[in-house]
Amino acid sequence: MKKPAGPDLARKIERAGKALHDEIGPLLSAAGLRLQLLRMDFPETEERVREVTASLDQAIDRIREVSQELKPSPFSQKSGSNSAKREYN
Image (cartoon, rainbow, N blue to C red):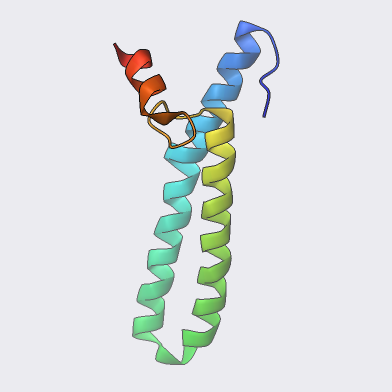
């Protein structure tokens, strides 16, 4: 994904990527854990919990992809270790 020009817009895009990764992703993960607790307390919900958990997992994966596009990690596989070393040296 190509970032639009302009420092203000670039900062906003990076903040959005960080928020997706650092805030939204963990909230969805916590929801998944709570569903698992629900399933343990009410075994009859197992099939429905499994369906909802699968949807949450897909959402988490997609959020990870989008946040990576908006704010790539210098340590990601796409950027490679050499670029990460250059970034932090």
